[in-house]
Image 1: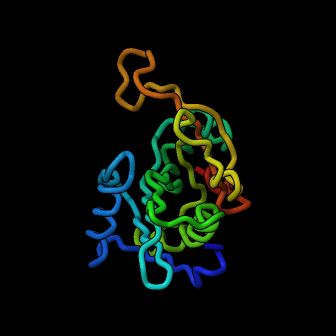
Image 2: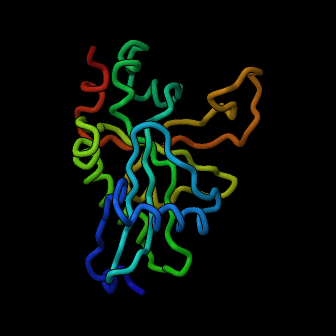
Length: 191
């Protein structure tokens, strides 16, 4: 089915709504990583077309330390500590398995990232200026993110946040980022 035949696509923030259990269930049953409760501040979107769910996206607080992201932004350690709350991390993105529409994923990413900062501010009282995600290149190419103008920032170390060995203990992933405002470096570097 071509994208234009879907009709209007609705982005429904479902955090703290009656549709949140549906979102959680769809993620649990259809995402290869299953459902995981997002950490800290977070938003969940149920994407619908013709009154039916077609996709789900989860966003949460960003990881505190990502070397390639931090170098890309160019902020100091102190600015990062103060401003990390202004970054949203896309933890899950699921197009439901029975939905086969070319270019749908990048279309959804574009639409949700245009609404993300305002929705975050409505929920938490502050905007977000930058979005990021991880792609496992052993599984995915990240084509939909790249088509939606996300940039490759670098690679993870493969060690995770609780590392005590300084040796990789998980797959190395690509870090992709998307500025949500042209002034992202300026606002994220303010002290």
